[in-house]
Length: 440
Image 1 (cartoon, rainbow, N blue to C red):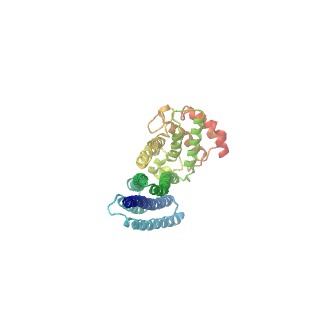
Image 2: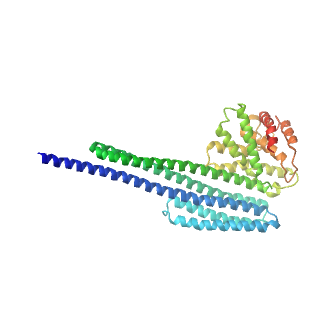
Image 3: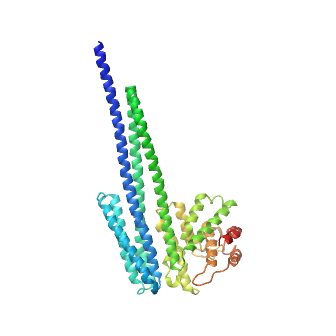
């Protein structure tokens, strides 16, 4: 009888220890699986993002050099052309590296297709820019503008869309990995409970090991969440830099250094904060709205990219036909905003950027363009942009005029309240007069 009990006890203990061991082994397996998923996801996400970010950075540099070549004098053209060629070589070398990355991907996968799309579109973009350079001096400005709108911009948009899709795909890996980790976490807890019911010793061992594993899983999950947030911030930063780069390129065509878009953005932000401080338009002026308007302000003149250089850089007053062509930059700007960032940014930002680009030349009295809107029919962001844009244009030197003094510029803005500008916006702007004088 005692022998039977001893044997039974041994069997029970053996079974208990065996089950406990299985539980520990399974927990170890869960950790190994999670670690493998984590390492695989990190390698895929950051290798892809690092690669496409280098391409984006080089393209920005190439676009800047291309603009310099197209707008440089004969004396400076050799130097700017040399910089352009060096950048093109860097991009083509990156494409070779890009091709090596693609070899490690599954043939026909979504990521491989996107990488191939970026590769092909970038190479086409470089080739079309070679054609564009050959047109300089032999083709009309209208033909060059048409070629740029028909071929260069669509390729630039396709590259941006492919890179943004790659970033979204990378984030999906994070979400999928987190889901699988949570699944393994659930089974880990289940086996820990089974171990507790079988034997105290096994459960103590399981609890100790489970706690360690779960702690590592939670730390890794927190790390994944942190990386996801950093990835979103990085994407947003890339988009903002791209937008600012495009705005700088547009300004550089008219002889500006890019400071105009920065100054007007700053003035817009000052007016918005002053309005919120005084409680004006409280139903509109949320922190998100102010941020969106400030970030979108540099895009107000992006439509000038379609205006021929002969008109954009004319030293004298534009004739009636030339002015009609110049006025088309507002509608063109709205269209470009919709096409470039319409499917990337949030709706509020896109709507604000569209309104600023389209309507910042509308006037309070209805005599502006392109739609002849009047009063509060004009979006608030465009009414604020109008004051900032005109003021900075007045106090800045342009190819067709000398700068106006700050005092005279403030007087002119104040005089145009109720005619060109929203009276309330002018009131806010005049309240900032001393602060603006200090910053000049």
